[in-house]
Length: 74
Image (cartoon, rainbow, N blue to C red):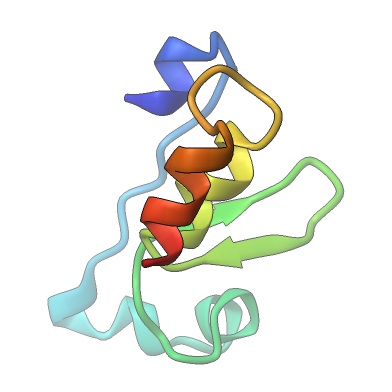
């Protein structure tokens, strides 16, 4: 939703967690915990965890102001 609100183009990649795809060498390289979601940036770096991803996306926008950041951290 935040990607859409910020008008950031993205491509969603389904991960078959029940068949073990999230434990593959390729996926564990993106997130050593083997958990989803993972956001892969254009330069290949990755950000994992459902709290970290929107915080990174929203930083510096109207969606992440000082009070909102404190509430997320809380």
